[in-house]
Length: 461
Image (cartoon, rainbow, N blue to C red):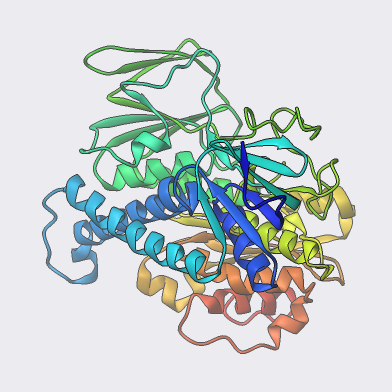
């Protein structure tokens, strides 16, 4: 066994180069710390290579397909021929490639010691990679997540996860999507735009069940209009595949048949087999629990990203990586507030939210909660785009805005102002004073706050 230099101890050793790991590495280096970043695959992790970026590229291709198909609605005569999946994949891979190259350049310029290989925690302060040991005064665990399946449901052939779905060489004629959360509804949206027949099966009572109930209802209405079928409140019982397709059995006794079954039942923590437990790190159902400063139970060992219980979002991991680097550097950063992290589902229409849902707010504040929904029908830019949806505000009576929930085309781009409103605990009256550019969808946020402040203009009280 060798060590990097005789008895050399680094300031920070990071296991995993995804959103959380590379953010921690870049920020720690920026703060003058000696950093080792270990990654077995490619820096950027799931988000860049198998998650956020490729799925959103597919969703944009889907939007282009819909624009071509529906062009006459806008007085433009265009013809839609077909989806060229090799061409779509070339576009998608080009986006990933350019971002990956840029990220590699950042890591190189940051004077981070980058180690390619599979690492294992062999002591609370040591990670071993291929016989070489890297000792750190601080160790950051950032090994990410994997696409989960259900017991007895084997992935292979016509039964796929998002990993395989991102690299299909053709468009299936029909797909069953098991899971109506973020990943499930995004792929359902893509495939419907590409021309497939799609059915979503969700065990919980509604699609995107983590969102505000009003957002779920609006998305379900839009999906029905688009011809996306869904079965909610029904559990999966089993699946069998043959040369012709997949048959899915439901606990209700019904069966469904399609070319493919996409298993989109969430992502599990990728924390087993890295020596965490052996080094004394507490585990809980595969996750690594931490305190608000992302410290594990072992002094000097931190965890960030999808292995930490909570929202599995790339930007959460990224923010956690920055927080850990600043914590190690002694800057005493403010802890992250989980409810203040923005959430976006990029299907058509988009769903975006930050803060508390109405139900969560009522659990905490009872009858002191006020809500207001501003319909996008009253917003000029939304009419131009031909989208339907709403902005819903949740506030404490005579208090700040606690949550913003939106449905509609491009509303993910409105989440920036929304997260400032919620995280800075703004009052509707304060936001109502701000001038929103016309005509923009952003105005819908302004109008909703005007209404909640008691002076509705393009809305009924």
